[in-house]
Length: 320
Image (cartoon, rainbow, N blue to C red; front, top):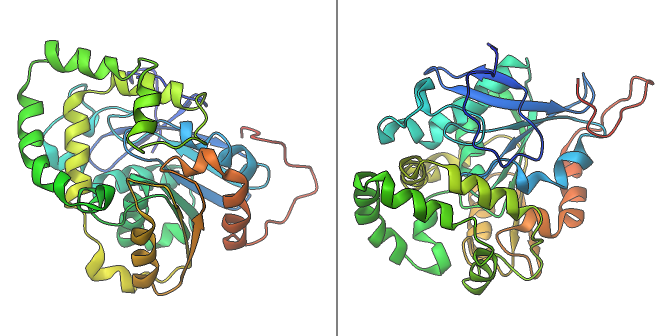
C-alpha cells in the first residue's frame, strides 16, 4: 500500500531522498526509495540502530547497477513516522525487531518483491532474521554484516555490563524532559563525536568521516524515547531457539576490531545457522560496510543469483 509522503516529518540524514511511502500493518508510514533496474533481482537493505542510509553509501550504488535495491527508514527514523503513524512515540512495544521487520515487509509488499537478498548491518542483522521468521517468502538469502543476532548488550565489548545498566537507563530517559534530552541528542552532531567514537572503539581508523556526518545530524533529530525503545527492542530479541530452522544461505561478516560486535559473535552465529559462512575482515570496526565495501561485495554477490540483462542497459542507481 502506498500514499503520498508529504505529511511525513523528515529528520534528515539521507544520502538518497525517500520518495515513496508504504503503510505497515499498524499504520506506521514507512519512507523508502528504490534504485536500480526494474525487474532485476531484489535487494532489501536493513539498516542499523537509528541509521538513515549512510552505511550503504558504497554497497547500494554498486549493487544497484544490476539489482533492484530498496533503501528504507524504520519507524521513528529518517522520513518515516513514529509507530502507528503518530508524531510522538507510543509505548515501547511498538519498536520491537518484529515491528521493524514489519516495516521492511510493508515496503517489499508495496513493491511486489519476494525472494530478496536481505542485507542487514548492525541492528539490521536482528531485523533481517526477524523478517525471515515472519515472512520467509520475502527472504531468499541473508548477508549479515557487523551485527549481533541477539541482544548486543550481552556481548558489548565482550562484557555483560551494559545489560546490567540498561534497565535503569531505559526507565529514566523516557521520563526526562525534552529540555534536557534534546540538547544531549543534538550534542551528537558535534565534530568531537568522531574522535570519541574512535577512542572507545565504536569506530575504527578506517572509518571515513563523510558518511558519518549525515548520521550524526540525524541522531540529533531522533526522539530520545524512540532511541531507548528501539534499544529495548534489540535487547529483548533472541532468535537462538529457531536459528537452526533458517533455510536460506547466509554470509556473516565481522570486523576483527569491532568492539560492539566482537568476531566471536559472528562465529557463534555461523555455528547456529545451518548454511552460513564467516568472513572476518582484518582491521574493520563496527562501520565495516563503509570501511571495506570492496571486500564485502564479492562475498555478497556470490550469494545472489546472476541477473539477466534485458539488453537495454542498466544504469548506476537508475530510479524506476
